[in-house]
Each structure stands twice: as structure tokens, then as C-alpha cells.
Picture 1 (cartoon, helix red, strand yellow):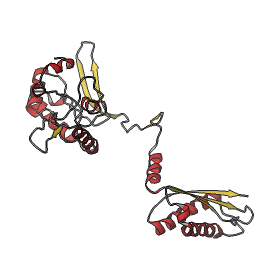
Picture 2 (tube, rainbow, N blue to C red):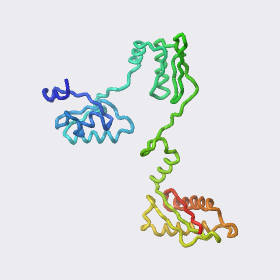
Picture 3 (cartoon, helix red, strand yellow):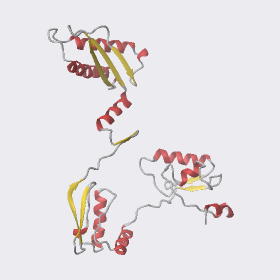
Picture 4 (cartoon, helix red, strand yellow):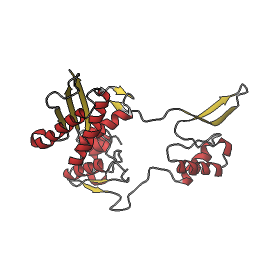
Amino acid sequence: MEDHELGRLPDNKVIILGTGAQGESNAFLMRVVSNEHRTISLKRGDTVIFSSSVIPGNERTIQGLKDMIVRQGARVIHYEMMDVHAGGHAKQEDLKLMMRLLKPEYFMPIEANHYMLQAHADLAEQVGIQKNKIFVADNGQIVEFHKATSGEISGKLTKDKVLTDYVMVDGLGVGDVSNIVLRDRRVMAEDGMIVVIATIDAKTGDTIGNPDIISRGFIYMKENKELIQKTRMKVKKIVKDHNPRTPADDDYVKNKIRNDVGQFLFSQTKRRPMVLPVVIKV
């Protein structure tokens, strides 16, 4: 039956099997709930059965989907209410049947942790696949197959690997964001950042005027004038603590400001903002 023919049947005679129980944005169920499906919509009295369990990480999305369904008058039934769970993974007898039907010469289980891959490999051995032709590979591990002039194919699991790290997509860039950049973003997201600008006399090494402080995502400066003033004094003291005959190196002063100001702010606020020191010599 085509979906446009559903109107010919009474509602209590219609069951629709659809995808999207994990809250996927483009799946059937989400499009129905969002009134974006061309023929099917929810109404009061309908029942939606979630036959899958919640994949960890999808809890919020699925709960939002359930809320939208109920708001439209439908009823929700899920695996915690009654035994409606239908697993999406084959059991071992099903796996054995597939191997007996396909009769593969080589077998390589995929898409699981190593424990489950090995369990699948053991099943393959039980149905008669040769042990030396069963490959339990790690992510990135290279499997080689060669075809001889006689037409015979031989395969082996090598110890060589290809790079299988995560590839980060950032705006228009793909794979150009390093771990250091992500770490910095995490720090700024959690504790904010503070910029310390110190103008130093190149001859004497002393600060000129008060250091400038810029806070983003750390504290609201107008409400924390005392802390800002203490930070300024801390910076002046850091710059002043040197031998006047040998003005300190710029990098040394920056590192000193970064470390000491960071520790000072943590002692005062129990937060660790990213400290960005700027040293200007005039």
C-alpha cells in the first residue's frame, strides 16, 4: 500500500513502521512530529511505540521527541513501560546461519569492541571457516589480499596501520583543528579568559602606568573592581621583581605573568581563566 492510500482505512486498522526512534533529525518520525511529512501526521488518539532502547547520548533528543508527540495528543509506549524492545543486532544463531548461507572463504568481523569481534570470530570458526582465514583487526590495521596469476586469492592480516584519528570539522576547515586548539576552547568555555597588557620602560624595566586588564567570560569587571586592582598590583610586582641592570626578557615576563596571575586568580575565584599576557616595551 502506498502512503497516499492510508486514508481509505480506518485509523484503528493502520500500523506504520518507521525510522527515527533515536531522534534523528531527517528520519521519518521526526518529520511526522514536525508536520513535515507529505501525508502522515499525528492526532489525538494515536499511539507511538518506541521499539528500541535509548542509545547513550541520545537521551535529551529522544525525550524532546516524546514531548512533541504527547503535545499533539498521541500516546507513547517505550521499552521501560512494557516488553516492546526489538533489538537491531542479530543473535549468534542468526550470524551462524548467514555464514552457512554465504560460505565465505575469508571472514573479518567489524563494528564492535574487540571482545565482541573475537566472539564473532569464534562463531565463524564453529561453522567451519579456517582459523587462519579469520581476521580480527583493530581500527586502521591493514588487511592485504593478493591474486596470483593462477587466480588463487590469498589474504593476511598485517601489523601495519593507517591513521584513524578523529577528523574535526570546524566551519569550512576539515582536519585543521589541533588538540591544543580544542583544549584552549574548552578552557575558555569553562573559565573564560583574561588579557593582561603591561607597558614597560625599555631602559629601566619598570611598568609605565597601570597594566590594562580585559576580561571575557571570566568576571564582570565593573562588579569586581577590587579583584581587578589586586591583579594590576600583582602584575606591577611581577615586572618590578628583576635586576635593574639586566631588564628581563619579554618571554620570561610573559610566562611569569601567565603563571603567577593564573595562580592568583585561582586563589581568589577557584576558577582558572586563560591568561593572555601582552608586553609592550617603549
